[in-house]
Length: 430
Image (cartoon, rainbow, N blue to C red):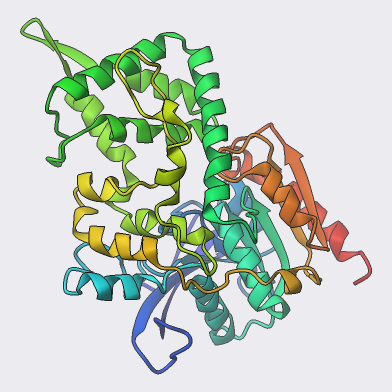
């Protein structure tokens, strides 16, 4: 296998590690973890500081991007960057219905319990040691920021500075609090979308009624339902997404022999929107990222009962949902069905380990520079401020200029500002 290559001005070097599935049992079962090192080709011989990137998710691979654009271009001006395929994703040991098929539901649940932020961070720490790096910086987007607070809780001595975009969670609140907040933010995003595109409300109702009265299948053979249509509302929390969503809706129907039906093009787009099909870890462990010694018990599903406007009814307004995972997804989505029993076991699991140490965080000495999006649909702004109020050596840039995926829009600008903020923190007395 090729271990390195050059593209433009960037050198890409591949790293493969064999690490414990359970870091508390270092001599037990192992998994593969992949990471890709990127460095400016003209600086490869220099003793550059390292930075490890934690992507959003959970359950998605590190970005496959060019080193000559956006946030990565800015980082490569001064860092040697490591893009980590978090365990279970990308070229690391894969999690899918196929790779788990040989296990019983109980065994699946026990195995999957080792794929949360604390295990991801312990992987990164093991890799730091293997690469003989004394300290490194971290950058986390969304869930990646959650991982960084776990890293600061477990191994603060290993970190030189931390950058976070849209990813400072509550370190103490249960999942129910999170969904109470996100349903409100999702309501706001729905209201803004339908105010911008009034005709879209009738379009959504027409599609929902058609799905309610007809059997419709996605290209993979999976029945398509109103609940699945609502899931595409996750896009409402991203920059420049409203117009693209409107375009999808307005082209939903075609006429065949004088009768309206949903087009193959629309249904194919709807299937592609379901990242859970190819990244089941995202659905299986999503609620557990908020659990510390408590069970989620399908929190988003339970809290939704307090927001009946999200339950579509004929003659009532249509509402999209957001970044929520529901038990019915493991009954409807093709690649999640084989994992339904394990998902239920994980939803009932109450003995999750701690992800954050608030005492350690309250004594933080590592510069932490972050951007918080005031209108973020995914990470509650009030909880971000609540958390940062108890973390010294932190500085936050609060803005409504971007949505949750701001680094995908103006990443170079955002990272430049965070680096300046961290430099200022670094000059403060420790």
